[in-house]
Length: 80
Picture 1: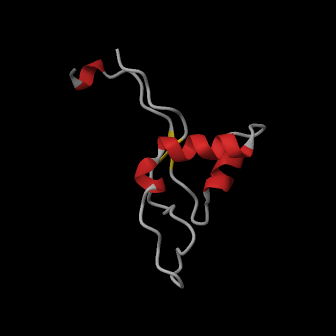
Picture 2: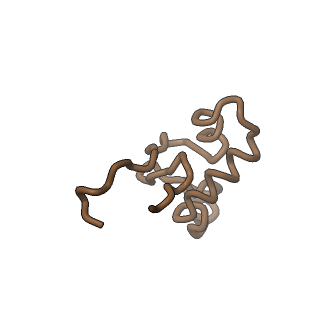
């Protein structure tokens, strides 16, 4: 497959500085069950969800999401 054949890019966002899985789910999937939306986000973003936690006492402790992360907000696209 060449670059010219690509037709669609998977929808993604850059998180806000204090975003969590919950805040992203509420913003991107309003009206959707929170647990389902969070579960979907985490499964589509294993590169973030499986990251080692920040050390206790650090500014990012308790939150895996960095403002520089690309967060996918839709499932992987089907291949032809």
